[in-house]
Image (cartoon, rainbow, N blue to C red; front, side, top):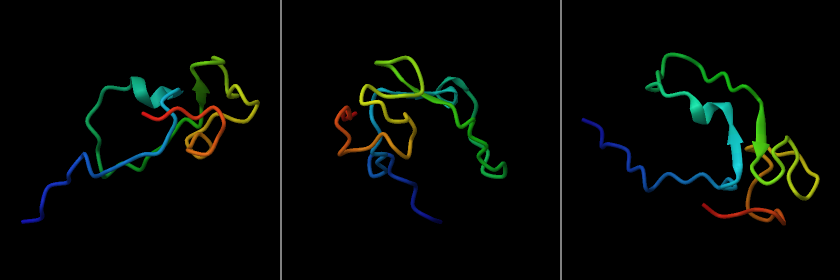
Length: 72
C-alpha cells in the first residue's frame, strides 16, 4: 500500500494575496476529471487582475522575488 501524502511537505510558493474562483468551489477533487482552471485571478490589494506593481496577478507570476509578494 502506498504511503499517504504528507500535506505539510507540499508547498505552493504563491502570494497569499492571490485569489481565484477555484478557492470558492467546495467539492472533493476527482482525479479522473482534468483541471479546468478559469484562468481568472486577482490580487486582494488591487481587486483586479493586476498586482500593486502593475504586473499580472496569476499563479505563475505571483511568486517569491516579486516586489509585492507576501508569504503565506
